[in-house]
Image (tube, rainbow, N blue to C red):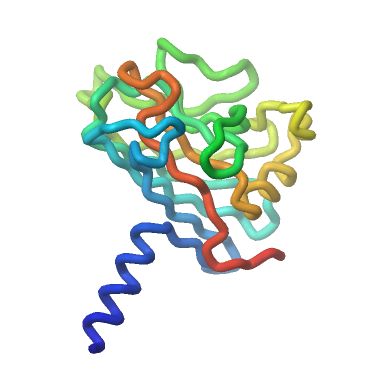
Length: 184
């Protein structure tokens, strides 16, 4: 019985993602797949998004991993929208020569071919700050309003998306959810 309970808890955590507090920082872990895309994408690709929101909410440290993509990665972002909807980009996670982030932001490259990194499987890390917010005035988000973006993340109204040459609108995705229901 104990093994069944532990296995069930593990499956639920893997399927839904995990959010928890650690050292007064908020941690997020999400699993990206093609079936979470809108519309659904049949792909061998998958990924993980891990992030820690600082205690004071002034930065998000993140790591994005993707593997077995069927197209070459072009860009990755955090978008705002509820589940089963597409929405505008508010934060860039990585860029390529084919898709460059807006001036004033400086996300890492999605891969470095000269260093032997693959455009279909890689891990990138970065730090997001208020200056990285892409204004979305129709959604009530002005430049530098990281607190507004964090409120949407906490409300489950944002998602991580990896765009590729095969699926320009996105090959893999995960809604960022507030799994521990901490609404502070």
